[in-house]
Image 1: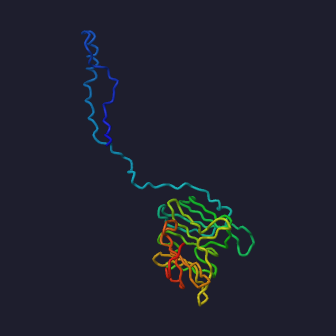
Image 2: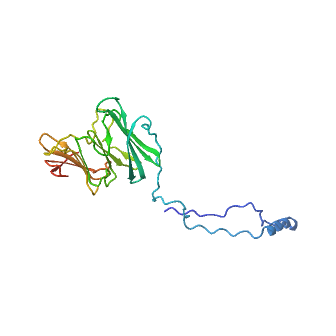
Image 3: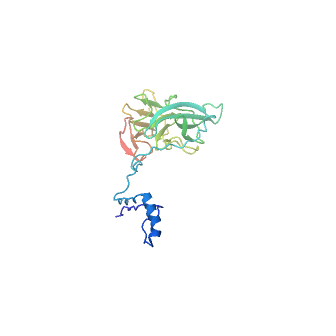
Length: 265
């Protein structure tokens, strides 16, 4: 065991008061100097325990200030929406969604999508899905090929995941220690498909059956589509999307959540 250091009295520059006498004449000046300085201070007691630190304990959480980044879409992209959210680690933030028109005048629009994370009016995160073209990004669907069922009216689940719709996929912004991550749901490069691409199909009443279901308890699942055999592919979101075990994939002949059997992701 490492012993605590012992302290010694600090050295002083006081004149030496006691020295072997060489004679009364030599001793007199020293006696005068000692008399004017008073008695020498007693030695400081030895320190028997470690000094008490006034700094915060190393186990205490230390709030970190995210490094400010540039929002490169601010002056060149179409600003779609601003979403207010309570980030689990950072507190109140804003998510700003954008689209950069890759082919002006085309129908439907060919937008390169992006989002920025703001805190206290400053951007702390930015991501742009380079190369991929979508018609839009929104907190609700505006086209008839996807269902968007928000039981409580919110597009944020109980784990802090934020859900957005494009014309062919569901984008999820998952909370991280420093902001949000799109976790492959808004990928870059045309050869990369979005993680939760929607294959439209319709129920007996002709209504869209694929899309998002977010219940009043904040639990979400996505119906991704239907294969040739009639099996419905879906995925339940069971935690912040970037964490291990946050998705459960199932397949069955119904759109009921987690019906049928579990399949590999």
